[in-house]
Image (cartoon, rainbow, N blue to C red; front, side, top):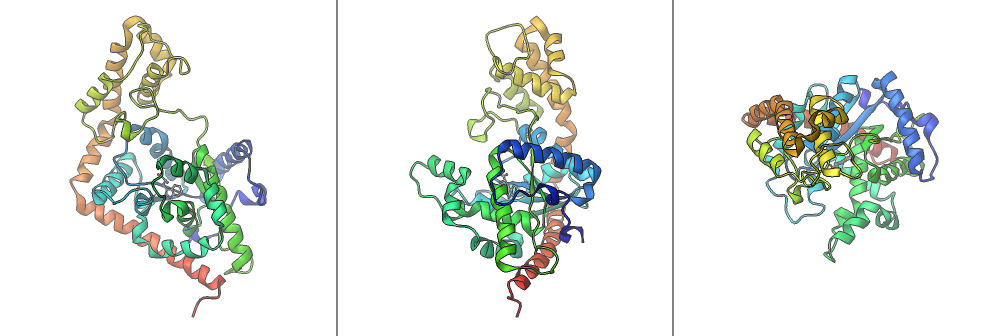
Length: 373
Ligand code: TRP
């Protein structure tokens, strides 16, 4: 089974020892991976996913969903975790979790993820994945966990509210997500690089401390980050970072009318002439970027076309372009939401597959640890 093959196109020449790589180093490695991906997609297993904490929006579609579909269609083995256990790292309850899981699943499928080729699963349904947490936790120090920038930021954001043990250890849980299926590639933003480094350390230390299942290869590969650099950043409708809590997102499931309203109240600036200038005119440029993505055109050309017609004309163009771009996605999404039995069946298919992979990996782990009785 390809998932369990420990062949890793990238590790032979890119492994860097224990040293924490610099960002430039990560960019360089990511570029090497990009080339290898085109030449030998079958050597890669990608693991990525989302926390089911709300509905996906256009930032997710253009930022990650479409590139996942591309990887899948290129022939890369694609594993998608709906990270339900990660929801409880920083909240008191699970919220309307089932609706959110189904909403996420519907968007994955509507965007073009094929459940026959890709494996979509939920944390909570894969016991053997979660069990990897135990040996993995033995391989990290509490100082390492506290140094993790995301964990640190969370700690600072909580206003003195105590941080849960799960928050402190969630990078280790992510390592279990990645390593249970022996993924060797993880699409991440720059801020997630320390997680990948931690995951690589865990893979390496497991090999050093607990040994192997097969003599000639470590149980776990050392995954690489696929950095999303050079891609466009989409801002919220107020020109600041897109975030659900700011109410500045356009959800994929919104109606065309709701979309029109969101765009109508989008922030622009006082200048009538429309120009593409992301540094000095972030809000207007963001609307141009979005229009360009929907129409598959250059944002500068669109700005030239609109010229002195002002932001009203730009918003009208964007509304039409976005609603048209999302039309099929929304129709398919709604069809899926109306068919919970199908969504359930699809999730069961993915969970069954993830379970067989996780059970095989756990068996290898217990064998390496001499704990098979
Ligand atoms: N934390 C990711 C998110 O916020 C989801 C996720 C869970 C993930 N486990 C992962 C991503 C492992 C990459 C690797 O959406």
